[in-house]
Image 1: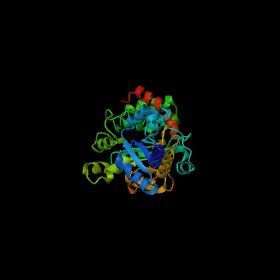
Image 2: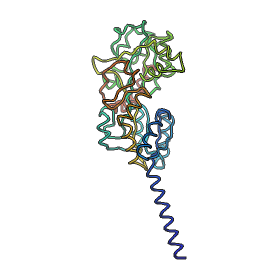
Image 3: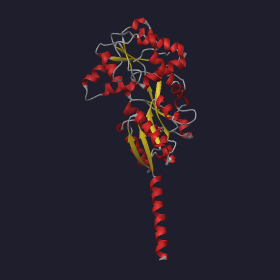
Image 4: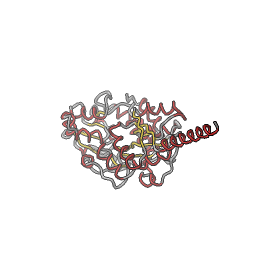
Length: 341
């Protein structure tokens, strides 16, 4: 009986050890990036590290609420999302923890990471002015601020105020000027809309190409994807009618944002999450993502895709993006007061 008890105890110990090793060889990811745009990179990480990645994808806000609801019971180790506004919300909600990594600090410029290490940018997205060739002379364009001038009355297409990309754009205006000046600009800017905001960035580009407006504000990767479309001739044709203008090159630079990630507060596989985060910032990972998703690499020295490169070089706004996250709430209220639907 005594021997049987000892053997049972040994078996239990072995099972626990095996379970611990198995858990140690995995990392659980909540990602607001679509599976097709992240899983191939995660598979590369598994192949090189032996660490299995369990991926859950969904809408950014829904995943954030899930993290909050799960609390310390969450299985998630790493949260991947888009826009600094959402990264800041995750930090403010207390679902992330700081991560100190020399590799990440070397790879990711200070401007594109949280000062306290709660999140790191992984790809860069730009939101310039796009204009219809032949209907707008680029010499007429200069800055985001100038789009409030009366010459652009009923000539601008842009998404609604509920869009996080536009909220960050307005936050950048507050950071560069002041809340009072940003509100004055926003009211005049809204008065120049060609139509009530609707649809996504692609819809703004399509509307401009169709003659509903002359100017569209959109992220460059949407235009790049449309230009590279092999299945949708209409999308490609619409995109070919557009050109990119980089605003504010004489002062602060064009507005940029990031997709990024942070280690969750209750991560059970914290070390594996850190290793994955570092892997996503490696040159090969940055190059793959730049080519596939047509965003700008956050890491210096990595080339953009050919179509993105065709949009030309530009000076980016150097404001630390964490500041835009902090100003998100003020930007949302300002847009509401300005009548931005």
